[in-house]
Amino acid sequence: MLKARALSIGYGKSPVGTGLDVAIGPGEILCLLGPNGCGKTTLFRTLLGLLPALDGTVLLNGQPITAMRRARIAQAIAYVPQAHAPPFPFEVLEVVLMGRTARLGPFAQPGKADRAAAYDALRQLGIQHLAQRDYSRLSGGQRQLVLIARALAQRAALIVMDEPTASLDFGNRVQVLAQIERLARSAATDGRGVILSTHDPDQAFALDARVLLMHEGGVLADGAATDVLTQANLSAVYGLPVTVETTPSGRNVCLPSLSQSAPTMTSDALTMA
Amino acid sequence: MGRGTSAEISLPRPGPCLIGALAVVLVGLAFGAVMIGPYGLTPGQVLSALLGQGDLQAQIIVWNIRLPRVCAAILVGAALAAAGASYQALFRNPLVSPDILGVSAGAGLGAVAGIFLSLPVAAIQGAAFVGGMAAVGVVMLVGAMVRHADRTLTLVLIGVVIGALAGAATSLLKVMADPYDQLPAITFWLLGSLASITTRDILPALPMVLVGLIPLVLLRWRVNVLSLGDEEARALGIEAGRTRFIVIAAATLITASVTALAGVVGWVGLVIPHIARMLVGPGFGRLLPASALIGAGYLLIVDTLARSLAAVEVPLGVLTAVIGAPFFVWLLARGRRGWS
Image (cartoon, rainbow over all chains, first blue to last red; front, side, top):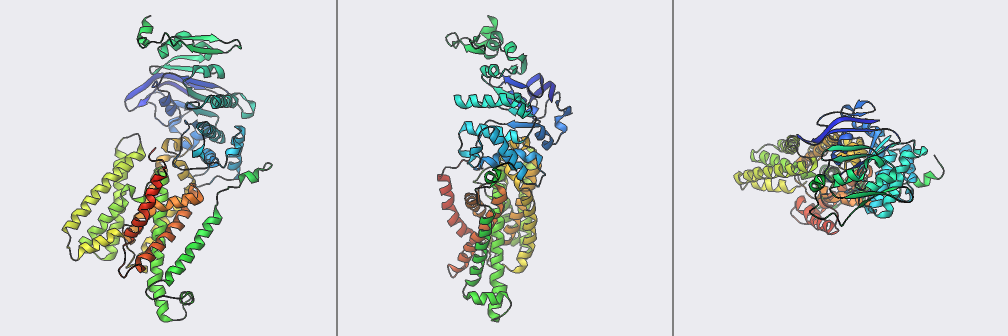
């Protein structure tokens, strides 16, 4: 579906990341993990064709993404930004209907079929009761769900989510993760591909996702969560000692050791150790 | 249609009905405005004059004096409010007015240059129109050359710069102008007025405004999407740069045309879209007609006040500022977000 080889990403002449290989197909969940500033957002912008790659190409269904019109791209990839407040108090339904834009002619208005698709998306996420509410007055978690509904209404095979659980409370975070899992794995949604970035390695375990672990502008490891998110890798990337343990229910969790992460403990000190 | 979807699909916000009601109110206001003046007319007189019957004096007043002015007020108010609604959506900021990219400053400079050179009225209007379009053209050109991540903010800042430059040039011309003959004309023009409007002045502006409105009406859904910001709009499938260019060009054409006609009338494009948004919501498909209708009615009332408050005409720009400024402060106090 989406494939990029030996990608160099960045702004102007200064690359943020080089030699990046990314590939995702239907039904897959790809979790992007890495410390702040490692280039996750830049990679997303490049994969969405919003930012030209410095080197290498992004192929969407076999075609270079830079040669495609925005509407074609949007029919194939939906983007879920971090929950934001738009400057105007649009209704939730209007926000979701904006996901239909790529399927409308340049001068067209969303019609009955688009409304039905929007309601369908809201219903899938169980938030149809919000349809007439003012989007700008919703809580962060509700907004995030609305933006996911917008991506669903877009009916794209691939969904890219930028830190979908950032700034959400515990309950909403679990709810959003459950929806992501359902999007990719439930037969009813015919297996969308989902790429998401997160700061929480436990989420990758919970989603049983493929993990792309980014470090200093490159890919440190790429593979199943249990293979990539090892004590050694996590400790190297985040510069503090992390242990990975398995709970009695069989799921892995990461446990950073706070007492050993004294200020003097830098990543340099660790790699030397 | 699935079960029970029709109830869900009906929109709770007042749509066509309210816009129809606004249109009816506007017609009523226009009728009233034709009656009011130093020579008062009864509704009956106005009606028969409109039908070309009755008192000849009333016919002349209605057709030659009042009606052109009423039409001009409607055209200018509708145009400024429609352009303001477009600019606000585009720049993602409800505190933006149509002159943010320097169209008024440019038009002002053009007109002042025309008055300074003692050109005929039509040429002054032409110079104002060209000045307004040119100022925004320069802003777009410089904006395209400056490489900055935030395209919108770049445009706004360059608009401020070009507006200030045009303002400086205008001031220079005012200093150099004949203080007895040209300076009062310049001052009056910069404050906006419909006092000497004739049908011949309206005719060139009308098609320009209509031509500018067409793309705005056609692109009304995309304008909504564009108000989410460039990046999101592109991710949703819009060629944001091109669409924004078309909307700016259309809104600028509209503003420059009516500024050439009426002079610099501030505040309408800033304040009216707010009132419209409170009534019909931010959806541009409803916001555009609602803004135009309310703007038309508002400027019609203000202009009728301007010509009947005192023996001397009060400049339009003065009245719109006196009414608009407190409203603007109230908006700020309500704590809506600024630049995000």
